[in-house]
Image 1 (tube, one colour):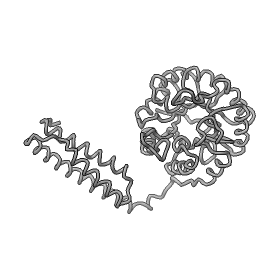
Image 2 (cartoon, one colour; image 1 turned 45 degrees about the horizontal axis):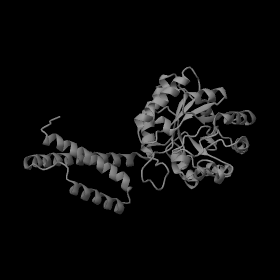
Image 3 (cartoon, helix red, strand yellow; image 1 turned 180 degrees about the horizontal axis):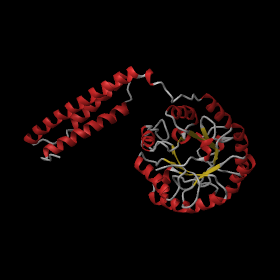
Image 4 (cartoon, helix red, strand yellow; image 1 turned 135 degrees about the vertical axis):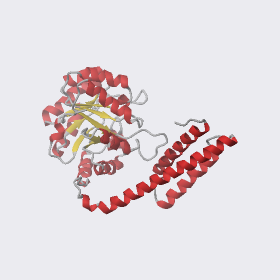
Length: 355
């Protein structure tokens, strides 16, 4: 897919900044936030007009009556405006109100029917669209949403990483799982990538930390929810920052160069390559042993999967991580993948499948 540049990405700012309240609550509120943010040179003003909520009874946005308020921000402060759309009707109303950039939320991205409806509504329209990752860590669903829009003629596209829902997650509202947006970037290197640290962290204290991580990973920009009085916000009060806090976060961000001198890393990369090759050789040996074990299991009539053995092995890995100061979850996922391949190999042997 060949993407066209989104206008707001042509600014000379080092980091694209999309800021504004989670929700449009009143005309006065929007104008107050925009007045302050206009002095901070933000690239795009955001505000939710329609708010998809997990359960009924929560504030679900003011609806279309908030669109003229958003338009006043554009007219009075000369700031491009953006809002989330989830239906064809939203698209029609937002475009009629002069909204410059649309974004598709995580819940909508997860629904191919909804994305296709939006894509059809946008057919023939030259408007930039940003697509948030789906709620669950499914990169194919994320790419599929982008493809549906592209196939409808929407070529000014960008992606927003807002983290992924994870049952039992305590620290982040939505776990970053940075490897997924990095894979998206590998597959679509020309697609602009924006981080939403507000939804990712769920707490305003984490916004700056996550924003810095995003820049360290060479993201193109940030979307940060900003409210003049966050504690009184009608939605997502815990994760919104004040304009002053936003300014402080942006001032503290460190911009790292991506133009590195390869000679600085030659010796290190050579060592890493050697270690990687050694790991691969060990994996080959491990799988050979697994196949030998499978022959014994087939001969003796033993089950391929041995839960006690598996649990003991995973416990050893956890203890090793603690000693080696490694991320237990990351190492666990690696060894789960190794164990899964070992099981696959053994099943082929036990069932006489030579493929």
